[in-house]
Length: 217
Image (cartoon, rainbow, N blue to C red; front, side, top):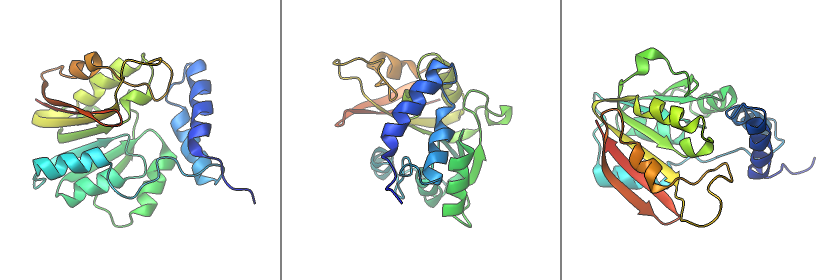
């Protein structure tokens, strides 16, 4: 049996095809399904929290007791499991049923509520429902449209007094920002996430180059 292909190469193919046919979110489950079938290595496969999330949490020391968190585009669940370990009642969702199935199977007995959900059509009861919203590399995976609609959805999850942590690849001023996904995001977009009653707390430029941005309502 031949070795699986690198998943990022297949991601380029599937995302280009999906965007071209006007279905910019369809490729996520197609890619995870290919990984689950062994056709490619498993996409975004990690068992530890994303480095910028961990560094932020170690600095801010959030107390999750009695508080709700949500992970946008949770993939295989590493970030959600980390937030649960900090005491948050954690919901994690992804548009990919395959990703959610793998996350559940990898974390038997987990307290995380894994859901299949579309960021562009979220349940109404999630509006302003979460004390901590974590969005890592999801908005930048979408062209615009529907990126702005997705941004409205992400910010709409933040409860009164709540926090949004957003991590994205940073546009450094060279190359084509529209050649993606991932689409590197500029300062204007990141500052624009301060919407709907959110205000920017800190916008950090991380080596990579990446943004790590914190907002509060």
